[in-house]
Length: 373
Image 1: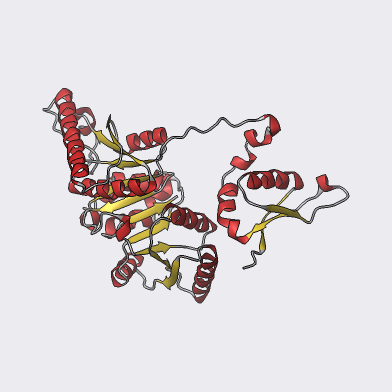
Image 2: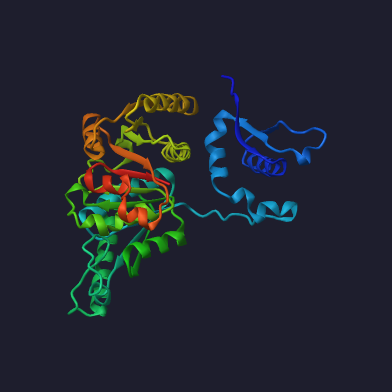
């Protein structure tokens, strides 16, 4: 099949040369067109073209400003320090509940397939925090003021050791795969400590257990899982307590929600590359209410078919005024195992007054939610 060239960007000649070098260093062939052959330096609006199959990888590069960083502009004198061969990690916040163990089961199987390590973290609140913060959420250990800080620390250490021992027993019995794991205990505000630890270890994904659709309405405001989904810059997999599977091998059908944003191409590529070792079909879905939306959805499907020829893809349009109810109906009718969607960074005001679809689905559905960044 002939791989046609497409225009990636229209840039000045100097910037096009920089981006061309960056792309070629990543193994992406790039060509500059419409150059003023007499005075190439003063050319304006030159086209940088690449092969269509390289588009998702190229978009990841130009979406970040790293290709125009001082290091790249520094020229040949700049040498990158060699990267250490550090194993990938999967971060799992735990609170010793049944849904935390479900997250561990899925995380350990995924880590085995991806040759990664598991990092478990538990964050506890001491009485000085709990007296000031009305948290009624998971991933925080709440103890009354009568119990001292020392007793609190002893209790959470005991529970964490018990969880570690339970995991070791499951590994010994063969229930869980033999994956290297570590346990970390932190004191403070749960989501803040999770973010801080995430920056330290740079995991490939965060897997969190949740209560699912039976959570109280007040949890919509203060859920740690929802905060992590909103603010994390790496993918997050939210696992409700009633999730029927414990291994991604059991996943047969994933729905990917798109709004036709260019960034969805990047997110979808990250999603497919991350789960390339598994066999499943994908349904592209949108809640667009006009005919043009369905045309765009069909076009995206054809593009993805070229990019990922081995992947089984179809598309559907979700109809109905209530998107959450329509999504729930669609998930049940089509036996969707996981709902995937892209989430983009939003400011604090939009998060307060217009909760994202990812946050709403987290509390509305009992289907695992994969949020791609």
